[in-house]
Amino acid sequence: MQKPAYPLCQPTRTPSRPMSQSPSLPADPADPLSAAANPAAAEVWRADETLHDLLMLRAELLASTDGPAPGFAPGREAALLRHLLARHRGPMPRRALVQIWREVFAATEARARTIALCEAETDSRHASSVREHFGSLTTLHVHRSTAQAIDEVRAGTAQAAALALPTEDDPAPWWTSFAYRSDPRMHVVARLPFWKRQEEAPSRVEMLVVAATAPEPSGADRSLLALEWPPEQSRGHLLAALRAAGFADARPLAFRRDARLPVAQALVDVDGFVPAADARLAAVAVADTLRPASVFGAYAVPLEEMTP
Image (tube, rainbow, N blue to C red; front, side, top):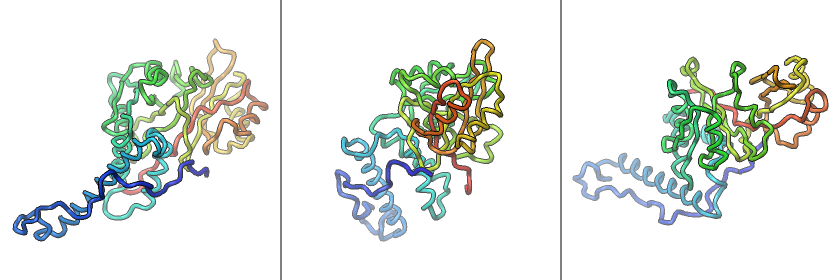
């Protein structure tokens, strides 16, 4: 398992105002909200003020020139969520923890999030899933074609585009148009939903998030490879070649054969974070493909719901 490039660490600076030392509750003991009248409420109040102080500190760190990496980083966010879930205890639901931090990610970034989305007029599930993942404050630019959504990312008016997960029955698959394109290079950086709830399985919509920035490892990832190979060869032959090259867990996501094209195209999901210089890619190219396999991006392995 490849470790994230960004270690989890303690803050190295303090907020611009002192952390709260005591709850600012009413001083009159007769007041039902006073610390004397309600000691438990005072403790909760103190916790809320401390939490607020830390949220303000997080926003200041992200806004500073010497702070952490830029806010939009799906790999880093996934690594942090896994870390928080691993240390989580007490009665607060795990699902609530994930959703709270999704809002924190969006609300404390120096730059407001804008996501381009391709969605049919009759289906609002995609927009709901994107807002759940990126936060309710995220601005959505909804388009009726994937090309329009991707153009927003290329133009810099959106940080990323959320597109339907490729399927084999798509007559005009969006991924084939820029799997090898480099002006600018587009990358898959996330897969939605990140938290998969069992009760939503029948109606769940799945998407890939595409950005002009390269993905970062989260510590538990899968990568997408785009390949071209002679159309007379079978899918099984291609998958066997991938496994022989060292991609043991190669899962076909989408295949495309078009009589108008001299090659067949495939999008394959493989285990791990695969860098562009991975030697296994060249091994596949020598064996079966017409040109080297292209790393189309990577995403953090989604979380399966464990407890409510």
